[in-house]
Length: 464
Image (cartoon, helix red, strand yellow):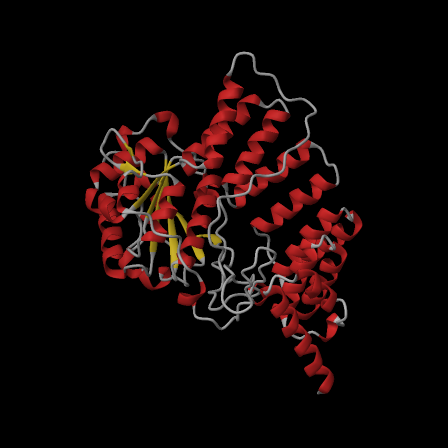
């Protein structure tokens, strides 16, 4: 017990030295410790930060390996891999990336790490573009969308670059990165534009900071909703307004029906590792270092994450909206998420326009925000075509739909009866079932203008 107490005493001295701003003495004291005997993860994170500031990256790496051996946390493995890539040890980085891939499901971080590793290994711009295009399908973010646009320009893919910049503006509206995207778009549209050639690939932009989820969010399962309709579908009352060239091919009806995934009643074990949470015990406020605190898994959801700072009433009044010719109001994805974080109202959605893969990416992003709001059951996206939905009695399916996000594709084909059933389901079930409608913009806009009561319940309308 004497040795253990001595280690604890020295760790306490290190913390005191850091708080006093005596960082050199703190490092000297850390060097006298056998790190495997340090029990506190808080102290190990502090030591790693001290080594980082002193540019002693090998010692920081050793600490990360030690933390990973104790926790098997995918989060710390992520940080370790980024550090090894930064240090230029490609053989070790490749081994760590394989370990990361086998440790859990594919997430946004998987594609980010794949990109960073490929770039560090000197892979071609074409390879980097393909990685970011796959990342976009998983989750579209401002910083990686802008990086993709830059790579398009460098590769001479002028039209793709311009379109990517337009997508960024459409999805996220405004902000520092969006301003840069608009400058890039203007540059590419200039008559004298020329690709940058063999210029060095820039580092990704730092995202505008938002609080990170302090608990694991399972990847949303997307499945075809098979409720065995017995009735023939009925044409929507205004279907004649549809433009012939926009009418979709009915491939959904031809697909084999996939079994519904087993209900998830707990966060999967491999995704329970969480990043350290800032603040509280273990945080040092000196200019030199700030050591994060490890979040305990049993911490209640409502205490795990603080929302973004609220905007003033004036700022929200100025929040731009896109008003269609039929008087329907739409927002960007970024504006929608900001409002979701500000308000606790029931959340139902419209995704007007956009390819199916983009719609699914947005739907997955929305499910993460629903988790942030504490709607824990929302881990499944049940996708169904409107034509199939028209043949159902929704009142008989509510128990099966509970705890899901129901994504209705080609929603402009919903009949008057089904629109009424959807409205009743929303009113009766509150936030237990989240309704998402998607389809071509003009047709869906017409649908919303006809069924105004249902449109009012679909609070968040995103113009894709």
